[in-house]
Amino acid sequence: MGSDDHDPKTLKDPSLRLLTRVADFVEPLTRFDRGHLVLEASQHRIIEVAARHSFRVALSFDRGAGSGVLPVGVVQVATAQAMAAESDAQLAAARAGIPGRLADWAGQYGEDPQRRPAVPDCFAPPPVIGHVEACGSCNGRGKIDCRACNAAGAVECPACSGRGSRPCPACKESGTERCSRCHGQGYEIAHRQETVWEAATNTARTQNVPERRTCGGCGGSGSVACTRCGGARQETCSRCAGQRKVTCETCKGAGALGCEACASTGKRHFTSQLVCAITETFESAPRSADAEVAGILKTLPSIEDVLRYAEAHRATAETDASTFRRETVAPIPVTSIVVAVGPRRTRVHGFGPTQDIRDFANIAGILLSDDLDTLEAALPATRLTPPRTTPEMDNALASALASEANVAIAEKPGARGLAVVLQDFRGLLTEDHVRRTSAAIGKAVRRAYWSAMLRGPVAVLAIPLLQFPVELVLHRLDPAARLSAMLGVMLLAFGGAIAAHMLVVRMLERRLAPGGTPRLWRIMSRQGHLRDWLLGAAAVIVAGTLAAAGLANLISPASAAPVTAPLTP
Image 1: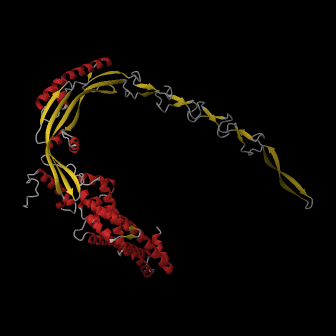
Image 2: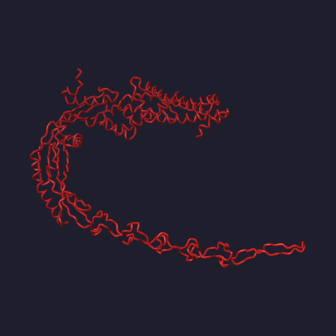
Image 3: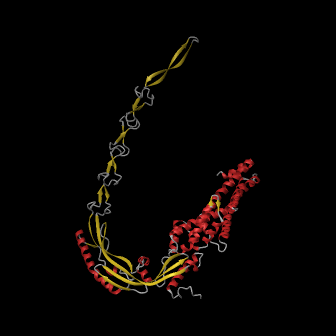
């Protein structure tokens, strides 16, 4: 066969062209060549599609309201009744003009399927009309009485409840307080001098003799009038200064508030604007007894999609009082082939001169189903804890990863990835097949990764044990030097963990794809293996380094204080 034998443009048989297009799309995505696709049956026919397009003109009023006078450009009428009458007149005039405008537009563009009438083609907007009236909320005043003070501007003093005075807090409304001179005893002690003759010594001496006297400050009662209220038991309210009322906080003493409905203008305006909208509807009716083909053609969303597949078209149009209708009949060439993949069959359709394939009918799923079945059958003999794989699983995983479609599925785990894969593959795989493949490859890669990690690279997690001899050697140095040594051991171990991951990836690439390495590093990153390994390794490295340092401190106490001191903050 020549170099052009597989070029769809040079093949005269539409069935062979379609098979070649299918093979060109499927072959790069699977490990199977186009020889696995066998053309078993074909059919080429012209299917007429009647595309019905309608445009309905609808008129409505856009009502508006606002504060103050009418905006610039609005035609003012006297009353609401006058505005309603003028609106009705505008509506009647617009309705009367729509049929003629639609007919004129249809005469020029009615038979062009891709032309759509616009609002200016059907409708000339009349001026906006409106009227102004006194605000109903404030009766045209622009303000409303303050409800908090009943328009008085002042309210009862909350501190004294409108009494103008408050109970004296010093005497607790008793009018008296304890006498400060006798401390409430009613008497005071006075001392007088008297001379006493000492017979034994035949001398006289003077001594002080205490006497209890009635208190001169309170007259013996022990209490005096309250110095704060003067005995009145009440004191003037400091909040209202005895006036019993205070300024209303709501209206700030004005007794009224600005009317929110009219923005304090006392006026409200109302407008009415006649607007036009065009509602577009589209449907296609394939004239085909093949339900599958008819179902696909019926889902074409626009006339542009129909014309893209059509070899020719003819259109007819009609109008009525408010609707323009167009029916476009488009003959679309459709080629259908039955492709045999081993014992299984699938049917693919190509639409239009370019034989656009909207659904590949699970051809890749059929080709890859055996690989998936083999991988799923090998997984039960493996386990994750402790990780263990088998040669059968490795071989099955290598076969699965040899197909680009499976690699793309493995790189996009989760529901979001599933949606992307299904959209990109255009029916090349069923949703069930994609879900099964994602689960099986994800499980196999996970077990292969951790199994390979345990075969030697995991030994890098022993690097933190170096901290033990380092601590013993450096225990005489200052704390900063020993802390630097500890951080150095941690960084060395973490670098070893990264190198261990890269080594495992290389090991798996050599084992799973010796003839062509798949993007295992990306698969493992997207599935979270690198993240899980580095987080787990970091925890082990930090804990191991601290444990080694602690053991060294127990053996060599002189190093204990300097090592732990910098770590305490």
